[in-house]
Length: 335
Ligand code: AHG
Ligand code: MN
Ligand code: MN
Image (cartoon, rainbow, N blue to C red):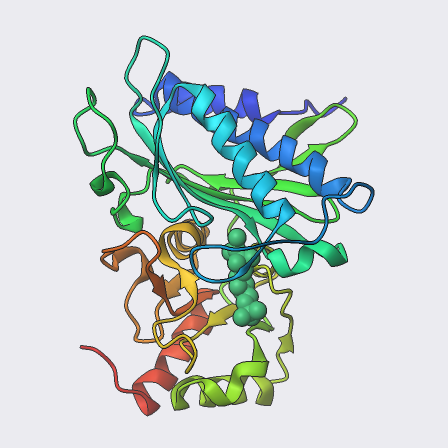
């Protein structure tokens, strides 16, 4: 007997029926994210063939080089979500300020989306995996007016959904609405994301660690001691430079990902809203743990600015627990 393929759209509709809190507009929004991901995927795949490679010559709001594919991905996600009619605002890593969206349709949009449209930009022009990260919030401001900053300055805990797209050897969309994590692989022959990984639970431990070891000397003592420990245990070091790709490996094989504060980034480099919250949301939903290097739960950290950054350590539950012991032993822990 043939296994029935479940497409992303079908899955979203089925989930809506099973979850009374899930609305039609929320489902349409998730579907639109799937559509934007397909458009970006098409461009990522032909990036080596057309003149879309290379640095565009500007920098993003956190000072990194912006490359053409970043701009493209940003535009496509904004365009698709703007037309959806379900989103009243978007905050993107690539834009200094949030973007209010006025709906032409005769209805009020209830959601805002936060996103890192292209994660791992240093990988673009060498054909190495990149990703997209997104999170969805319900707006807090009144529905009859434009979105406000308070709609975006909500904690990870307030997110109603989070996910990532991995443009890798195959393209996957992994997301959660707070009821487990599911993964969908894009079948290019039919142009559909198909359910391939149901209810992902990450291993409680593993033997991969993922950190930019080039910054070792710039890390605090407790992080250096923990990294020494990983090396003592012969854990395998893997660092792709795209958090989506590094986390994806850990999701399935178990491991720990670290981006500690450094001398250059005393508050950490990764952006809370676009990178840390959505990934922490997924990691926790898959049974893992996500903390700062001061052992605060990422999902609970208060956010005061769109581009606020944080240190982060996340992954398999038991490995993060081990890391915690090193911080307690060697670090100055906030009680
Ligand atoms: P982005 O491409 O969106 O700026 O994000 C890159 C992030 C993250 O994905 C990755 O883990 C990290 O920055 C790499 O930074 P380093 O080169 O400093 O290790
Ligand atoms: Mn990123
Ligand atoms: Mn990015």
